[in-house]
Amino acid sequence: MSADPLSRAFAALADPTRRAILARLAYGECTVGELAKPFAISGPAVSKHLKVLEHAGLVSRGRDAQRRPRRLRAAPIKQVAEWAGDYRQFWDASYERLDAYLNHLMSEQPDDDAAK
Amino acid sequence: MSADPLSRAFAALADPTRRAILARLAYGECTVGELAKPFAISGPAVSKHLKVLEHAGLVSRGRDAQRRPRRLRAAPIKQVAEWAGDYRQFWDASYERLDAYLNHLMSEQPDDDAAK
DNA sequence: GACATATCTAACCATACGGTTATCTAACAT
DNA sequence: ATGTTAGATAACCGTATGGTTAGATATGTC
Image (spheres, each protein chain N blue to C red):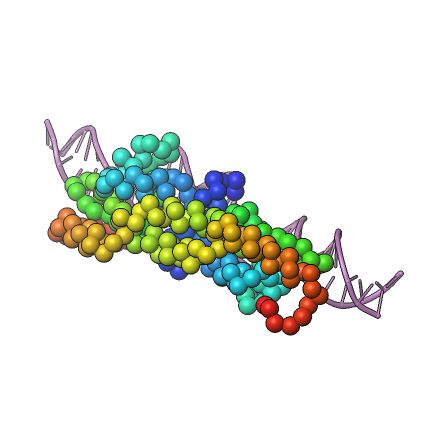
C-alpha cells in the first residue's frame, strides 16, 4: 500500500478480474452489481477489487440514487504504456534472436544442476 | 502463483526495485552482486526479486564461472504495451471530457431504451 | 586441500491479498 | 413505518510477498 502511482497501477492490473472490470468499463460506466454479475465471486470481493482500482486512479465513482456507477479512468494506463514504451528497442524479434543465440553460446557446458 | 503470463508480468512490474533492476539490465547484462549494490537490501532479497522477474519471463539467466549474469527479456513488456494500447482512445483529455458530457446527458433523461 | 567469491536455499517473520459470510448504511418505494 | 435495493464495512481465513539471517553449493585461485 501507499506505493508510488506506477507501482499501484501495475499492482492493480496484475489481476485478471480487475482487467476484465476495466474492459467492461471501456463500454461505458456501470454499477457494482452489473460488474459483479459475470464473475463468480461475491459482491464484497468486487467491492474490494474496485477499491484497488480506484486507489490506483483507474476507476472513478459517480452517484445516481443508491447506485455508485463506476467509470474508467485511463490516465494511469497511459503511464504504463509510456513506461513500457521505453523498452521498445529491446522487444523486436532480431534482438530476441541475438539474445537467444548469445545465451546458447554461453551455456555450451552441462549446465546448472540444481534441478531440485 | 501460476497466474496467466500477463498477470505475472504486471505483478512483477509492480515493484520499484524490480523495475530498477530492469532499467539496469537495459544497459547490458550484469551479475546478481552488481544488481544488488545500489539497493539497501540483502543478496537473498535481490535473488527473490530476480526469481519473480525470471518467472515472468522478463529476465534470463546466463552462466560465466560462478556468476549467473542476468539479461533483459523484453517480450512480456511488449505484451504489456499492447494491452495498454487497447485503451489509447480513453486516455486523452478530450475523451475524458466527452465521457463526462455524455454522462451528464444520460442522467438528464429518466431511462429510455437503447443507449447502453 | 584450503580458501575466497558468487549465488542459491531454508527457515522464519510481518504484512498484504483475495476470498468468504454476516452486518451495517443509504436511498428509493409503498 | 416497513421493506427493498445497491453498496460498503467488519471480521476472519489461507496463501503470497518482501524482507531477514544462517547455512548450503559451485567455481576459481593459491
